[in-house]
Image 1 (cartoon, rainbow, N blue to C red):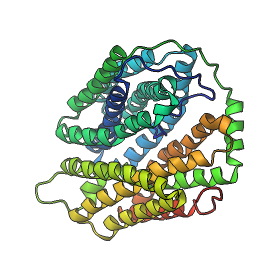
Image 2: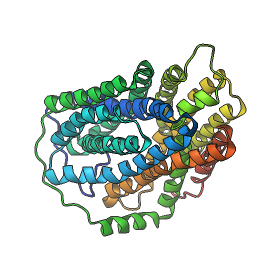
Image 3: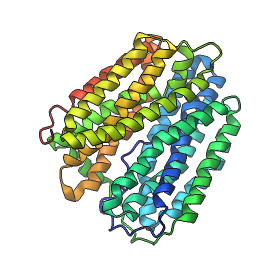
Image 4: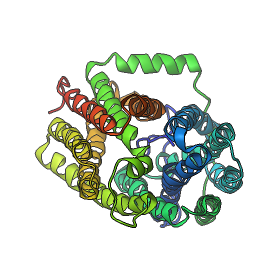
Length: 415
């Protein structure tokens, strides 16, 4: 999974979008993205962690960090490749359908392997087919939605994260004792969403777009980061995302080994309680934070404050290993992260180096989303292994969030 900004597309110059013939495109985008995030959260956050623990309980932290880091690297590299393939074909639906249908055999295969090496290989295969699906469905917004309706379409895409997180956590907990069946259920959900989307939407073939040479992409990356304000926005996003994913990737193990759960509650059941709380808080703060930042025209204030709120949230379970502390963490962290992502995305659009290269530069920003997800599992594994517990991980993540808040201060062109 590579966390990305909704609706940025996959290439530098997308053609003018053609309005979708059917009226149900936005609900279908919501369903398609919800299914995708449900698999990412339920598989990577619950079932995969349980499978890794079953193989070698003593080395579960290091093994899970290795699998998470390698698969995140693979997903980050493969996502633009998958996007380029659909760009060159001029169509999205076949890639959405193909990636979605292939998720089912990939998940079946994941449930049949029994070594860390094979889990890593098969999960990378699963990431490959899911990134074919993700790259194509993400590109639907710039392809088919007029500019005046992009806000609603991006909201439909963005809501897939909290809705999918809740569904993934609940299903992951329901199949915690039978992860093989759970894998099949998640694969079937994505396959069903892909069939529903492609059957229900009509697509006109767009002009094929040539791939951007690697040298040109690297030059664009370096050029965008030479801009003072954009560079600081990039650094702030990277730090915040790194702190967030360093903790969230290990949520199940944190609940097993750090938190004092109520009598009779399993860690998987605790995930199913925490995730809805976190998602509701995220939805509320996304809407409220976006509205207030528009109302007062103060982006830096809200971005900095929400990043500091995320840091405060991380201090709660560091100070207390109790179950009420984790409940408070879920709510406060959701409020901070949801507001941050909503307002920071608006801030970034205001500091893009050039308007004509907006899509390209938003793609550069996505490196700040995806890159930290690659190194977060390695950093988290190292911190936990060296410190012997999760308290230090919370403190390191809190420091990263504070650094992310401070990074917006040097930005000059936005209040």
